[in-house]
Length: 327
View 1 (cartoon, rainbow, N blue to C red):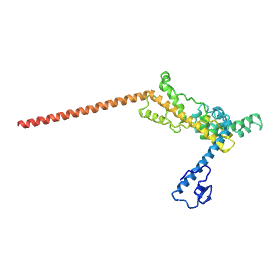
View 2 (tube, rainbow, N blue to C red):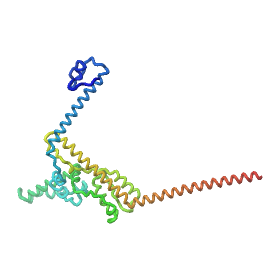
View 3 (cartoon, rainbow, N blue to C red):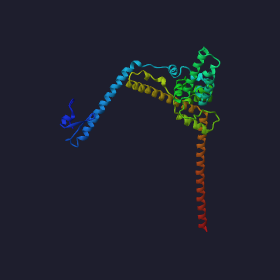
View 4 (cartoon, one colour):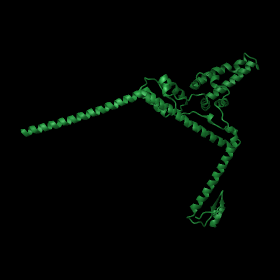
């Protein structure tokens, strides 16, 4: 099929009658069976290029509109958006924070909501009194805190914005503070991000080999649910139109993905450093080495015994043969 000059319709070049079907021109007849697939491909490719051009133009427009709305928000700002007050402090769970169970949250809420319920205070305070207004505000704040902490998605978002120490201890840290005293709290701290339940902790020096192996198998395949909303550079609520909002969301997701990859590398580094310094692992490796050496020695002993037995059997057979010959 000859190349189509710019601005010339391929159908007019072929001088074939056409009819309109939707947005595409369809050949009515007279087209060689050999050319039909080629023409369909040309039409499809043209439509695809036009769609991609439209998408690129929309992205360019969205990026241009969003350029002036780029604003990085810190963890404190994002926490304020989720809850004006610290929900853990309001429910008197500040000493537990992420360790607080759903049962802890419910029990604390029920106790505090009875204490600050407007109906409870109505009998002892006049309506509109300053104390009554404060209790009403406290009651609402406690209810909001309970709603946040009892909704898994919202709680994860808030916990991800809590202050967190990402430090990975070094060999020098372990030498100064002891391996278990240094790495135990770090693994406990990072266990909060585990997507899977039953996250094992480091344990002690007397842990069985099976427990140690299960611990490292879990952490080498650690799956984190940690969110990185503070990596976002755009607030989709600031978008002026749909394409701009979608563009902002894609840009934010790219930044979060980068942080999730960095997080995965950080946790893996923690596990590798711990594994290389763990005295239990060293002891296991030493026992395995000794077991391999003992097994090898036993195989060699058995081979030597088999060779000796074979030599003795041959010698006995030779002696019998010699005795029979003399007889």
